[in-house]
Image (cartoon, rainbow, N blue to C red; front, side):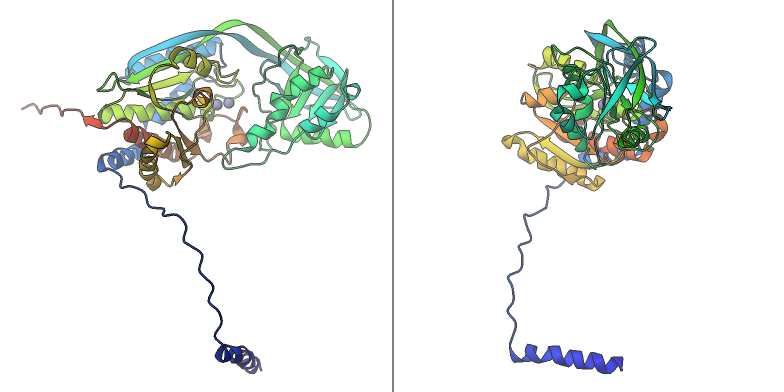
Length: 473
Ligand code: ZN
Ligand code: ZN
């Protein structure tokens, strides 16, 4: 029966085919050619050797174990600088030194959030950097909730005055972390907006993507002329709990304690170099930031970044002498307001920099390379893409790159490289107590080091092998 049916169907479709030939559409073009230049053997060799790297793990393991958390401007960050100078000197870097600068130092104190009515219960909270301090006994106020920063902006001042503001948002996981810019608004701008409207405090849904009961810390700076108010983050489960409580429609009272202090202090950038054969050639600068938030040990943010970039520079040093000097910079006090990056720009911004690059997006595998070398050096961008492709890294744009500490310098026109790490899981851990060494996959870390080493090998103007030591008879 089925056979008969199929035979009938075939016969029915076959008739018009024979009667009249069907038109053939024009096939779509295959797109731009996707071939890249051949990778020099010397570059491929040094890249592949870096896949067995142990320098980066040794650095991030040492920093997170022997120093731990290291908030900008604190005594812990000073210990991190001393650790860094000793370590980088022992690794054989030249010109290892610290360039110090002053900054206001914000320190976390006692923290608690509790719903007093209608359903008494405790919530998990952490203050944002530069938050005003509550009195030791905390503050009590009615909570007014908003689903987004736009809703807070649109609210009449009378709806907010004298209250504790709560702002939610819907930050998604993305590979490139692009949600952080937009969905970070409640943390970055929320406290200033709430204060201008007369709020006595603000709590926001953590700028994060996990559902652990961990609040995500983070920086914010009150706008000029705005009175600082206590400001902090609720963990995602606690923020959702507060939303459900608010939805019940009864007035919600919160007891919020966010004690902190602020004092004048100092931080510094740690500098180390691999001297180039030509001291007059513009330098290559790579780095990350040495400071961290205080809730975890700053393993992925940014212990990994300082470790990866220094390990790559060390691998070049082991291979021989580059034409250009490679400068490794471990910036201070990034989290509190990019102080180290701004200070470096003030001090060194007018020196010749061939290219700059920063690793500050965790420790997962690099998946894309962006560069911004300018038209005359576009071939170098292609050479870089070719050198990285065997590591599973896709070619990105040739006219853009970004970074945190180095962001203002890129905006100022400096040539830069961006090695994009997979950020899908980054905001599960970012600025939380879970930012610890165990979250780093040593294999992914090695892939990072191989990519950074290849990048330095491509851009350093050629590495002259060290003369081999003569064998003793
Ligand atoms: Zn960072
Ligand atoms: Zn950070």
